[in-house]
Length: 284
Image (cartoon, rainbow, N blue to C red; front, top):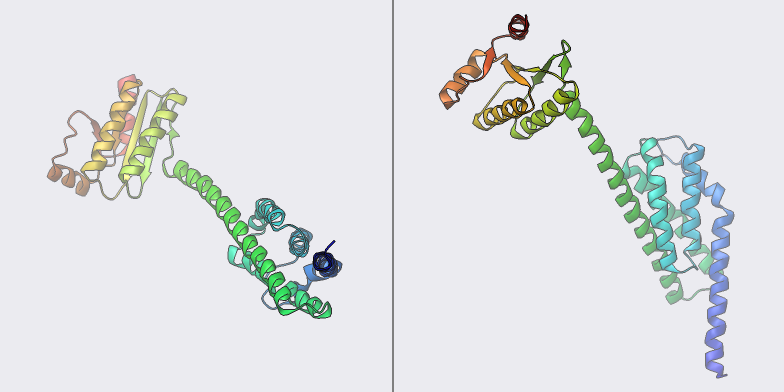
């Protein structure tokens, strides 16, 4: 075998051993490093067992990335980001503080790599290659943490939006056959569409014969919203539910007249109790 090739192979083997030594040095300090930041002034939260384990897992990935295949490390980081984001959300740890955790261990472990590189007498090129490799792993950790956190946050927002939607358009049963939809706040076209969906879904689910849509808490109604209300009433009629409108205040009534909105075929009442009284009288 060519002496030059043999020398290169020996250098590679020797480098691998030295890199593994750095990895082992970091892993031997894993528990200590995981607790180290609790004494840091930037830490504003308690280091419980779950957070300690999360840090140790990150430190292990960082340490092993020094001599293992980079693509394997990236795959580990992807799984790590997916698994630990729920812990961060449960701890109510904001994303910026979570990223600060990742960056903190970039600096801490970077110092260990530097000291061990000096001890191993790495030349400048070898040290640069190793530290650049480590930096790319940290950048990937930030990427997967941010991506997983964003996905989890988006899922939480969907759940919260659904809850707000259900609370903003409640259907109250006042009798076995009569329900009331009290609306409060701005009624835009999107919310009017939600009104239709909820009125149809709950009206049929509860087997109602009459739904009273109370507008006393609605400040403004324009032509588009009025058109949506007409569509809600028409849709309810198709499934056998009669609709009533109540709570149309004088200023809204005046606006409707000025806009040319015609409610002549719609049962309207000034107050909720008058609508209920009228329905009960008809049923009797």
